[in-house]
Length: 93
Image (cartoon, rainbow, N blue to C red):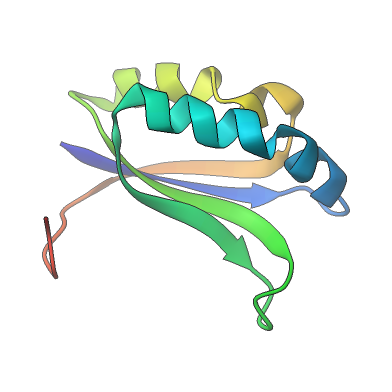
């Protein structure tokens, strides 16, 4: 089953994001659970402002456990986090 994580960065948290980005990317790559993912940006594409991850998991509890160990979560980057079940209809792999 797929779940989407939608994380919105706290204001003025770019330094926190950048300091933890390498560990965050490594964590999710090594998890083997990501179908798609990347940062939200400002309209000009220059500044990262949040995250979207499509996570493959058996259930919401598994996603919540994975998200709790994400370096971004541990660093307190996100002002809000939303986890939603998602059905991949267009261009699924």
